[in-house]
Length: 490
Image 1: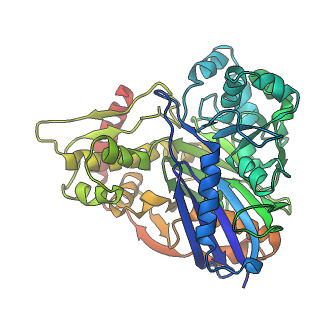
Image 2: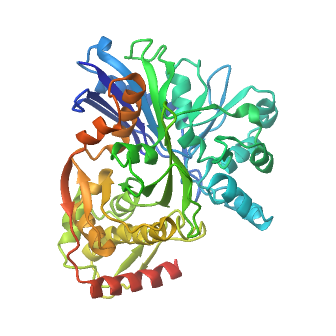
Image 3: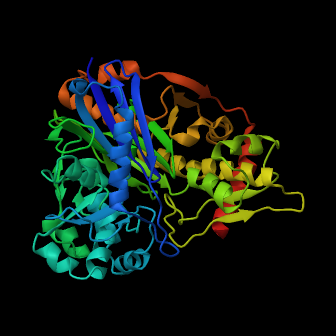
């Protein structure tokens, strides 16, 4: 029996799954990653803490697994989080700047004011927002003493987390990233699938920093010196977390869509082999590229805050001691009592793209309780997705059918039912909600022959539960009207 390792390095922690050829989970490991908040709007990670979390999770997951049975490793990652490290020592020259970080908002505004937005969107499919890696790299080069000179001399390396982990897993032998992560940097041309000299010049990023771009599936390196993992194991899958979840949900046909509820909420729709330019504030991104050359694109809408809003209720307001308790508290009232929570703690993402927006609670009365605010917070997570999916339908020209869901918050039945109600579509939850890790395993297994093709993978996808719309449309319309008013105030 061969095993495939999936490393899912996320914002709040690192998960490792070990799957057998029948896609049964045979090992699991998890370690948290500390969050660093140097000042309002700034979010950082210690790259060494990320690496330590991955190696610890690997050793936990591999307990009892015969080393000779490991066929491949797949990596999926928080995407736009950016690391600069010294090629000679492997040490980062600055903490990783996390995708949620907003410190480059002013730089993005300057670029927009300079008339560069349309050209950037045309080449990259992205908007000028501090969410993406390009302006983070520029910030580090401008603020870390000696970094720019070292970068131009070829002494530093840039990577999103997939690239950083690949470097560490191969003992510094491979500096590469895949097309999905490259497409999130503001530096990658969607049409040529190559780094753009025009964009590098615009953002002031030296080409010498950049990794080689490879397909999402196929052997790119082998392990060397990794605690608990034998040398020589093929690393054969790389994909950003949301694209990996799309693949892991078997969304292989154009029009298939999924939503991952993690720290944020991320919706992707497969649009086939051609990029679809958004007219509604969505992103156009690479969905995956396989070793046989198959290339797929996606439309994406991102809400920066989803599960993190529940963490705020727990840690910031002390509503409960465990995030899992939010469902019972929210279900103790029949509705939110007119309260609307806009969870814009890190600005508003698609389709609004308002980095200056802040979270808001409206509709509070003397009768409002903790339960109403808890329920409104869950509803706010779902209501953000309505804006995104309606924009996606307009851009793609396709009505949404079934939405597949995954991620930690998808286990919340109240949230999933409300999501179905306000969208008016069926929500399908799979048996294994860790679709992000599953996608990395799929890509690695395809790249090493563990599984033959996508048809074999699609047959393994199993539905655990579905939610169908139950609320009358007049009530939904009233909620959506209050939501629109609250977003305007945020």
